[in-house]
Length: 191
Image (tube, rainbow, N blue to C red; front, side):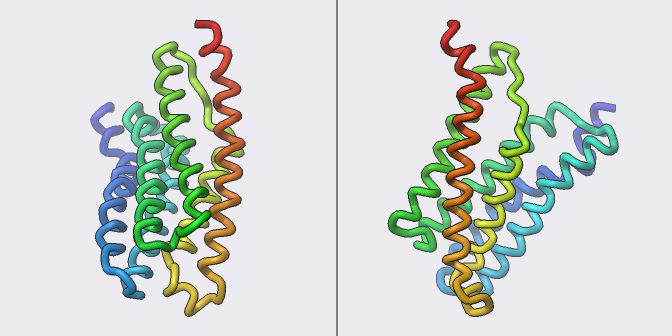
């Protein structure tokens, strides 16, 4: 049964999300090409949708696995982090807007470290509803930003909408990060 869980549809969706990361980077390396922006957005959108379905299907079909529990948050963080780096690289994120990306990246790394530390103590830190909303807000913001200047031709102020949503995501990121650290603080102080 364990072999079947390793290559279950939920885990395959998670593997696909990880493979989407270099694909998004590859197409974004063509600067100022509308087709590259739309292709990156398409790959990213499919990957983002799998974020919902991999967990939903694993729970629904009772196919949860240790591999899936480990890879799912890694896939999320890779997708979000690499998109932020690439958007900063092509200057879609510029000036003060880079700070929204920095806040998101720092929180992801800090919370991952806290989770790893607490796992050594055999303390589970469940994902909150607000953290799931934070991830959704990040994915939507990044979708607008990946469309970038190509999206501005279809939807005026597309990039500005994406930048505004990224700041909303950054604020949610700060709050949920604080929430996790507050929950984990009693284990850090008691040592």
